[in-house]
Length: 254
Image 1 (cartoon, one colour):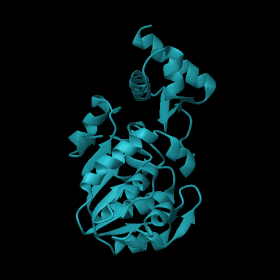
Image 2 (cartoon, one colour):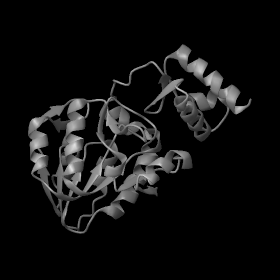
Image 3 (cartoon, one colour):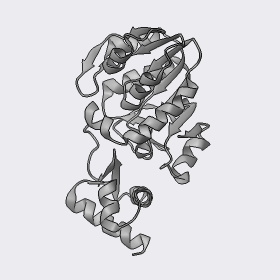
């Protein structure tokens, strides 16, 4: 089957099923997940489908649903582990960092060395719980209303607290990243906090597995140029990374 034929068949299948995963499509058409992801990028550019976390939906489907922390933690676990390990090299000795809520940033929190003093600010309840007994870390938990979906503090209190801060490095998560829409997330309150995190850091390091590339969600909270470094996994293609690098972002592949 030629690529054009496969892509037309994928578009029909997605339209009928309503949603399909990358792994499911790869199995159906007997190709690699990397090939499917390239197909989906082509179909999305043509306006035939819309990529979402781990898969694809018809183009007219709205990306408004968020998966919970547990479901997101299970997705691409090995890739997230490698991203977190690579990101550890970007943690400054001493100084301060902000850890955004997210499953990959939580993995990074679990890797922070026991003998390196560091001030860590976070609005994530799971990350705070993981670091609360850390012997070398001064932990500051940001205030706000805790969302059940992400288990993170959000709202005016959180944003106001971040506006008064200036950290050395922010380790940021995102639901989607694209050339046209920048960094985005489905929720307005989450977006406001992420925007404040970006504004409050001297250096912004984005931790995003390859499934996030090319995705666009409802609320943009940063432009590509606001990011200094992207740490992603080896499934990312050159075509997906090119517009990110052209915006001045250093790309590190874990």
